[in-house]
Image (cartoon, rainbow, N blue to C red; front, side, top):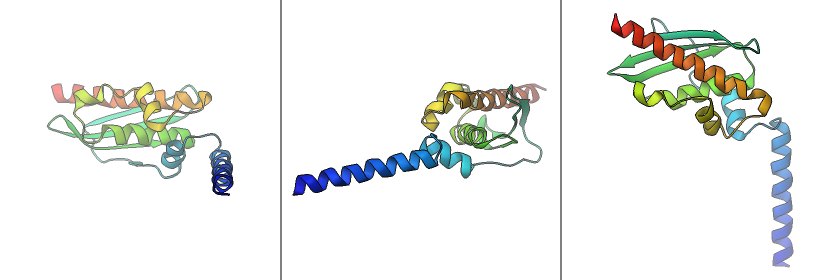
Length: 147
């Protein structure tokens, strides 16, 4: 009887997992979470670095950086895009906050996708948009610092 109960519980859990995947539209748990409850979303007054890029899909993303002693002390983003754009923007900001500018150079499309547990193929461009916008904001900071 114990073995039957275990098997029944396993089947129940698999059904719950499938149902949750269906509810999330095939999105990983973290993409769903970050996309529906974005981290660091918003604008910033007088940022040290700023960028705005319109991606090939039509989504626009902005990134704002506050840097102290070459560390990202604060970072935020905005996007007019969908859940996956918000998830990618959120992921980039979470990954960058508290890191040095040099460490942030490693944040790219691939590392954002890894952080999020992957994305559907047709949404992976959102991670590229977030990475490109972030790197453009880093360049803006570096140029402003040299002046």
